[in-house]
Image 1 (cartoon, rainbow, N blue to C red):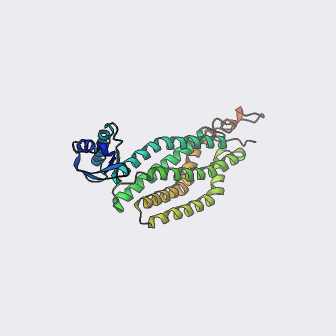
Image 2 (tube, rainbow, N blue to C red):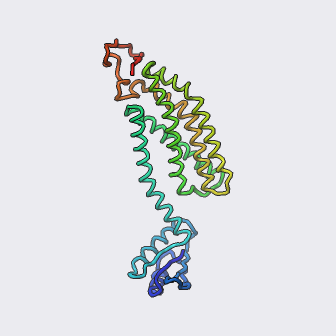
Image 3 (cartoon, rainbow, N blue to C red):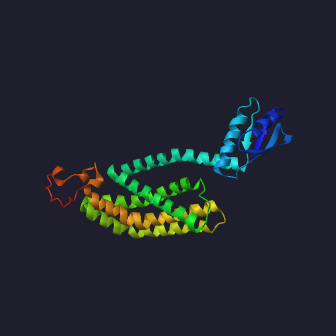
Length: 283
């Protein structure tokens, strides 16, 4: 790592750094542009947890020197900052994306339960894609871990694409439910949108899979993870999981809209139906 400090405080900062645990060697370098450089060599291997701890200790120590304006940089320090920033962004961006998507789904489907179910399937799909991809990276490709920026990027791509597919299916299912009931409406929606969604998923998966051919580990991980996740969404979640959950939940899927009510509770004097039947509703 490299420390930049004011020339008048170079010796003081140098002595403090040498006494910091985890530092093997600290060498004063040339002074230019009003800054003095100090090259610091940690005892631990680069980009390890132990080295990151040493960087944190060095930063705490040199920042305590009044007037030194010390700055700790270098490749490992930059990687540490990227990791910290990414974790902070994940805590902010992921919940915000989920809330916005839930609101949009609620307004579109005019229900509460259906958006929650659809969002749950997307989250489960992302978790499955992420877990499977990490297994491939570690076991088959032999990568040493996963880039810290990959989970957030993949989450944004997969949530956007997965929700799109579910919107196509659930939006058509709601339209058909008005006429045919939940069961037949979902089956009709599945047959009507299946070809389009599957084709779009295959095209997108192939597009992202091209990134796997590039000589950058981060792009390989993003490309494989997104391609795998898109295939899960298009071929499994949209075609099997969402329809199955809808059929199991029944008309309660559209709660609290009027599509979720039994026929006896609906306006217009409609006659009650048997427990295994669903009403054909008017808009």
